[in-house]
Length: 110
Image (cartoon, helix red, strand yellow):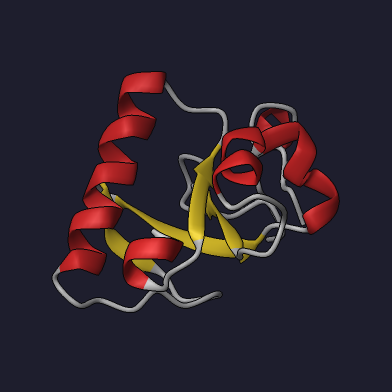
């Protein structure tokens, strides 16, 4: 995403692998069409009946989660954002009332 479109690399945690691939491909298609992604904005087109948001990945997590990107970019000089999905109540991990049982499934890399 970064090399081709100038948009951050995207990582998703905690969902089914096939679903994560579909979401990444959908994000890429939206960017290819000209959509610019933003931190903190809610996106309704990537999940059925739920919003999603992006947060910036702290570089301290790059080696654990973005090894291929580190190889591809020959270092950590690239931005990465995490696609964050909400609980069934459409609440995000940082919001009051978020389902705490999901915190270990969707680790935030901030």
